[in-house]
Amino acid sequence: MTTGSVSSRRADTRRNHERILVAAAASLADTGEVSFNAIAKQAEVGVGTVYRHFPTPEALILAVYRREVRHIVEIVPVLLEKHAPDEAFRVWVTDHVAHYMMTKKGLADALRTATAFRGELPGDAYEDMLGAVSAMLEANVAAGTVRPGLTPVLVMRGLGGLLWLDPEGDWQGDAAELADLLWHGMAAQPG
Image (spheres, rainbow, N blue to C red):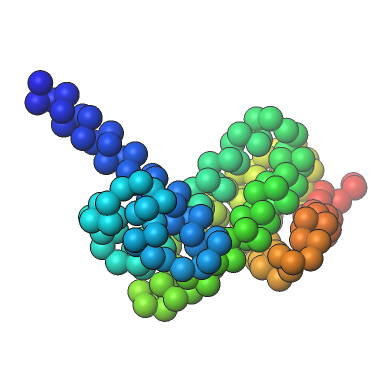
């Protein structure tokens, strides 16, 4: 009986944790602000539960950031399984990375504040993104669609151009053009 109640509490804790992150992500996307009271109400938990999971606004912002990066990273194998490597790269850049950047401007502002407080972005998120880019590169090199020798860091720098997209403009079209430009620079040269 004790084991069952502990398990159900753990499951409830995990559900609450995820609901808080979802509510915080929505709040950051909409307003760029973290209000523990508003997030608790949206997540349908008590404000004390939010504080137990995330003792500071900075901790909550960084947890949201890690969750969002995890989603971008975890989609890579799915895309590589579903699409040819060159198409998987384009879909990932335009439908996932660019979409994330355009819909998370509030998170970006909050993240700048949180990292100014803590000092820097979490290194594991950056490493995870490099791993995702590396997986895309490896699949495309194996398929002969990109030239070998490209580093994930270089491609990440190229993807940094997505930060300049205007969320009020045609960012989808601009992201597709940027992906094409980056792709042409990466493409295997005809021998």
